[in-house]
Length: 321
Image (cartoon, rainbow, N blue to C red; front, side, top):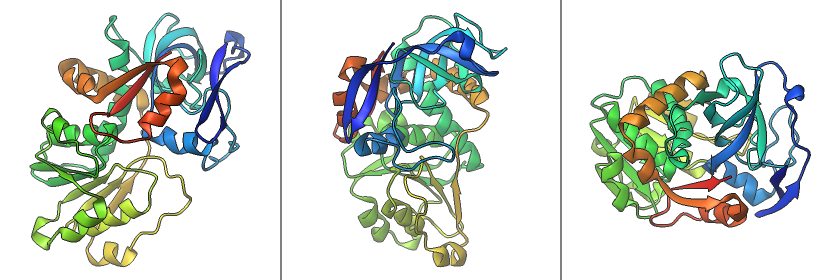
């Protein structure tokens, strides 16, 4: 089967590799023929480094064929998961992050069947939407609260949208790239075209938000800015997969100002994917506004490079595989 493989920093090469066989599936696993995949911000540090920037427990730091991509839509070829059937179209996670390929083996628990023959390029948005919905669940009741989102890429825009849908009184976005054109579609009251550092330093006590979502990811400075910016008794959510083992946080500030720092990965994935799909069926404009770039899988190197270069008008990049 075909795949793309990281062979160096910022370098993807097409390769032919043995196709996974249905007989090799373990309990709970599913074989999926890929149709579309989306580039996540968490993929980009690996693309730039040419390997896993931080080796996960039990996994080497190398880059297997198909890595790094985990947001997928595809058709089930074989299944050892009783809740996923052969022939189903599914959306969700490639659990080994190796979906830049013709076929992928993944955990069935991270997939949800998709009904109908809707726009598959848009359907893939259910995966990041599920992540954001689960994250906002961890914030508790945000009704009437002032929220700020640092980083208005595709994930930051989804956070703005979900916070607004959950009843936040105001939602402000902060990004050095001008995202004003997308503000209304995602429920933002204001877009500040600046870095998180100058923004956090400009706030007085009365202007501090109750909730700050750090949606930039892969940087330590932005986490510190979020902690400085949030109101006393407020909450900071750190989104994304860290690429360092330790991030410096001003614990004195956290303690003295009664702050709460929250993070995590998405659990109960099939259930939250179902919620995300239902939400997007009712509000399809969210996906169509978010996906700004659809490319062929053969164009993956240029697509990853573009996705890692924030610019006005570019949010989510999807590949037709």
